[in-house]
Structures are given as structure tokens and as C-alpha cells.
Image (cartoon, rainbow, N blue to C red):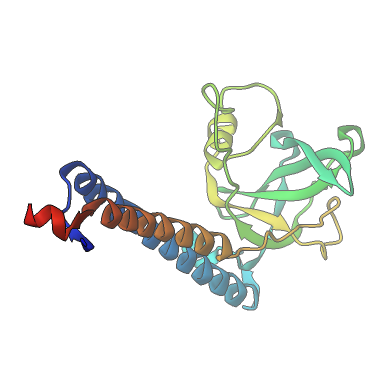
Length: 239
């Protein structure tokens, strides 16, 4: 009668794959955990800054890091001729435009870009008031598209754009602008339809991805152990 047992004898090629894949998968898992922690920190910053008092920009404008997500207030004149109209923006299922207009503030050498809200048709915009207005809103940075084709929108002559970036606008207009965009408050008496939707920021997706990468690392490790176990029998050894 022979007894069967296993000998742990790692093989070269499976071991090489294990030494490469396990650290890579584990590293990706920890990276996703770190991304989740960054998202949680961002949510805390947003909630804290949205509760802060309104910051008046009539004087000097602080660095963007100090005003991001804060409610700001500025006084100036809209330059309608330099407006940009973002296409295919939806409101209650209807397609239209977001109107972005620079605000010229007295004593400032840069322009403050303001997203004044949604309109269904450009024909109904009319002229902006030529007098000083008080504008309130949250400071944000417009997100560029994941894929940009061509040289960007800074060289186009059209005022109707599919997306918006501060860099493209600065090139297109020839103006210096502040490194953020103001989402005009719905409480302002002037402007268009302003129903801003705050995208929920959650770390759940990153946690799920982290668990997947850790699972892949565990599977590779288990497969390596299984491939390293060679079955033997006592009869075979005695022979």
C-alpha cells in the first residue's frame, strides 16, 4: 500500500508570473483605496466651504485653492459680445445652451467667467444689462472632455461650443481670466434658468475596484501554490 502526499516545489515560470502579478494587483488595490480616501477628503472640503460666509471679490481675488467650492460675490459689467454658448445642455429633458459670459470687475485686470444658466434658444437671450450687477455663485473649474480632437476650440470663430475649458476661452477671447468659473446662484434676480446639480462624490466605486484587485492578487497566489504542489507516493519514493 502506498501513501500519497504533496511536495512543495515552486516552478520557475509560475513563480515569475506570481512575483510580477501579485505586487501589481496589490499595488492597484492600494491605489484605489487611496483614491477613495481622496474622494472622502474632497467631500469634506466641499461641505465645509459651502457653509462658509460669502466671499466678496470686490477687492483682491485670492488664490483659487482658497475659493474653490465657496460662495463668491462680485460686482461688474457683463461683456455679452464675448459670451460662449455650450451646446446640448439639458433642462427637464429639453436641449438648450449654457450661457457663459465674462464679468468685468472694476480695478481688476482679469475677467471673471460666469455661467449664467440655461436657455432653450439663443433667440431669447437678449442683451445683458450694461450697468454694474452683483453676481453670486460657487467657484468651480469646468471639466474638459476625456478626448479632445483637433487643436481645441481656441482657434474657432464660433461662439457655440460643445464643451468649455478656461484655456480655450483665454486663447479665443484674448482675455486674461481667473482660473475658475462662477456658477451663478439661482437666488440672483437676473440671469437664466439655473438649476445646478451637484454630482454625488462617493468612494464606493474605488472600494469595489480595490477589492477586485486584491482578489486577483489572491487568486494568483493560490494558483501559484497549487502549481507548486507536486503529488508523490511513498511507493514511488521507495522505488
